[in-house]
Image (cartoon, rainbow, N blue to C red; front, side, top):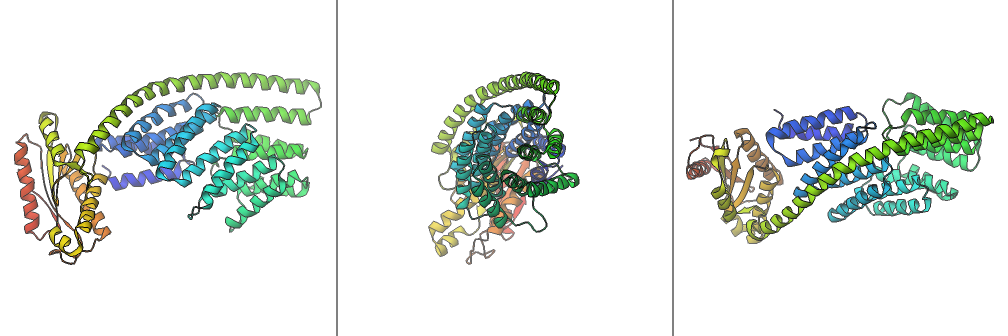
Length: 521
């Protein structure tokens, strides 16, 4: 069985391979769900469903709508637990999915939801990414002036952000492209050169910069330089080992440039590359491909029969695409309607419960449960439904001496910080509460000794790394904890288990504090 640390590595690997190896992304997500069934971790569950949704968005027609159940499940869990980092990804993925099937209204709705969450958590990077996606959607629909406005808003957001971001580079390239499309050639050149200045390449230009220079020289009708840049792109394509998610769009832009130059040879090459990289689940890409096939024939074919056949093929392909699109939207809507109904009910209950918890059941200082709430849980607890039951007793070492030395305000901060650790590392079946003063108690239902000790070790490790000075402590020069626990699988009296944990805590103190002890029945 993998540890939580190993699962976190798997989650990092999913983020790394999601573009380059989607099948590996899917496999790792399924492994996360299998692990989560045995360990009950809501964040892992939400993460796995989020990126399974991400995987299915890139699948072929007939499968892409399978993203909806996963994304809605992820949305349900993330909303319940305020996993805002996942909510931003969920809304962005839903927007991308509805863009791919040309349901721009639904896409915009989810993008706006994503921006709202970004505002709440002050996530400038993802807000800029979503604004970029909206701009790109408008650009694809030939709303170039509006697209330019969104790109500039996103770019301005990142101008005040100190950390470098690849989103800024994408925006500079998109700004250059849309400026060329509206014939603001010199402004486009400024964006291209600014991108080169801020993101210099050590070995060679990247695909996006080459695309922009090729478009720029095509726009000013410098055939020789435009074709020189086009040849660089063809060379990269020939040697590329990993799929670039933007390849189709890049080749579409370059095809248009070659049409402007009336260059049949290079237009044909880029049209072939569009066919190679077109995602068959994307209505927009398939429509774009058919439109350019027709444009190629209209530009270069002189035979009237060939032109008529091009129109016929275009009409037939669009009709077939539209039927697939309508079926995909219908199936997706059915799943979405069902899940949204459940989500609305849960949100209402969650809101009511959350307000009650804050007012009555959550300790104001430490943000863990109150002793009163723990007693309520114990009263309602049906031990016949549980395999094991444990109590963890936690005492902040020498807190009186700390308050005398550093003051009660700093002492309150220590209690608040310990409470935050108890919340951060808990799973869905661990209930931490403030028992009184500097004492905490955690009720653990159906947790193994390994899970309980991992919980304790994570808290102690984090506290040690935080290294809160305590020069008057009798056991260390920093804030430490004495911990005792008892985990019982037999159905004995709850009070007896509590007393065993209390004895274990006493034993930890006798052993010099800053340690943990287990006592068995």
